[in-house]
Picture 1 (cartoon, rainbow over the protein chains, first blue to last red):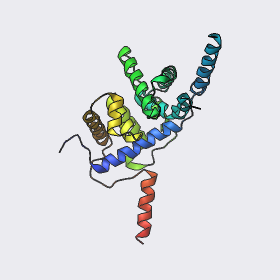
Picture 2: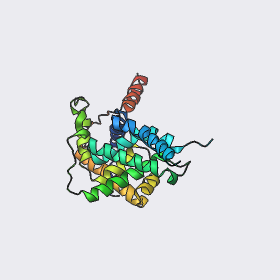
Picture 3: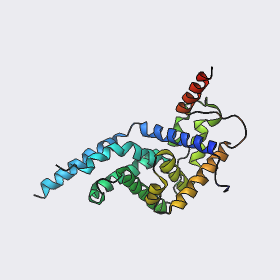
Length: 53
Length: 184
């Protein structure tokens, strides 16, 4: 038996809290610069393709 | 017509940002990391194998970006009291033994590798094998990091102490309540 292993009860509680913390962060609104990033990359690609003609 | 895997990127942004915040403990650094990751993914999309797990691929790029920048800027101080605990004022400590504020603070104290492992296997649902591949270490290393991280959290939160368990998870509470009802 390893001393590094918490009890099953503690493990379940910790994982429930980990999921909750992660879920809260996932649900937070994305900042504008991240929301706009993909459309900017797409626009850059289109521009690059036009320029390469 | 073959779908462009880049169209899928948008679906992973919230999880990617949550992972970045867990790693960096700093909102603005996390956003920089996500931005770098998305740009790298976009420009190297041909390296993504369709049919494989895109989230795992993105998380791997993000963690590589994180450790590479950490090596470059060893002296940068993480904003432990910043975004990671910013919900403190909004969420009063009313949930007893397992106060989320305390949990966040305890979690932020873990070494990067343990925090990362717990987010991957404890919160994001990756298997030990998947996490090991993402972190480029042996499965045993991931298990050991997860165990040590959970053990440390249990100590910081006094979860292994004797006494009644106070449950905060809504599902668990609902199950307990239902069991209680059926007994009467």
